[in-house]
Length: 392
Image 1: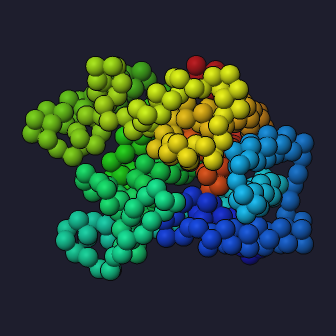
Image 2 (image 1 turned 120 degrees about the vertical axis):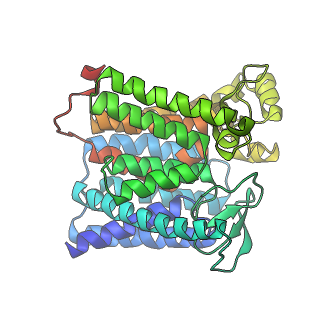
C-alpha cells in the first residue's frame, strides 16, 4: 500500500506540473518531469507495477504520433522534451488500474486542498487584507500575472476572477468541472470547493461546462423526470434575465457571463475571444490545399502571432487535418478501450467541448494525463445506471 501511494503521488505531481501552474514553469518543470518519469519507470519495473495490453498499445500509437506531429518544428531541446513526455504518458498508460485509482484519489485531495487555501486568501485579498507579498511574473510570453504566493491574478483584467495558481481563470475553472466529475458529483466538501471555485472563476466556458455536466447527470445518469430538467433550465434562464436587468446590466455576473452570450450583427458571440479578426481573415484566404491538410506548423504560427487564436480552426491551421484526424483517432480508441457508458461519454464530451473552446489545454501534458486516467477508470464500469445509448 505504501508503494502504491508513492507511485500515485509521483503521477499526481506529473499531472500538476503538466497543467500549467504559473509558479512552476519553464526549465524547472522540464527537469521535474524528467526526474518523475525516471522514478516511475524504475519503481514500476522493480515492483511489476505495469500492466500492458493490446488496447493500451493501440492508444499509445496515435497519441505518440500526435504529440510528435504537434511539435515537429521544434529544436532539439523541444523535441527531447516531447519525447520524454511521450515516454512518460506511455508509462502512465501502462500502470495498473489500482495505481490509477489511487492517483485519482490523491489528485482530487490535493487539488481540493490547494483550491480551498488559495480561495480563502483570495477572498481576504478582495476584502482588503493582503497576507503575502506579491510580485509580477510572466508565463510563456503570453500571460502577465501578479503572484501572491498562494494565488495569482491576471494583470490585464476588467474585474477580479479567481484562478488559484493557474495561468488563467478559464483553465482553472475547467479543471474544477473535470474534478467534480471525477469525484462522481459526491455531496462532500471536495465537490463544494470545486463548484465554489468554478463559480468564482467567472469563466463563461466553465459555467457552460458546469451546466452541461449537471444536466447530463440529472437526465442521463440519474434519469430524473423531465419536469426536473425543465426546472433546472428554467432556473438558469431566470438567473440570466435577472442579471441582465439588475442595475441595467451593470453587474459583474452579467458582464462576465450573460453579456458574452449575446450575438452581434454578424451573429457572432459578443466578446468571443477564441480567435482574432486577423486570424479569421488569414484562415479564409490561405487555409486550403496542402495547408489545410498539413497545417503551417508552430514556427510560422508563432511568427504570424496567432497565439491568441485557439479554436478548432486555429488548430487546423496549426496542424492541419492530419493532426485533427490523429486527435479524433486517439479519442475514439480511448473511448473504445474504456467502453461506452454514462460516465465515459460525459467525460469525453467535456473534453471535446474544451477542445472546441481552445486546443491548448487538450495538448497540455497534465490535461492528457487526466483524460487518460479518468477514461481508464471508467473501463467496464458496472453500476445500476443503464448505458447512455439506452438512455437516449
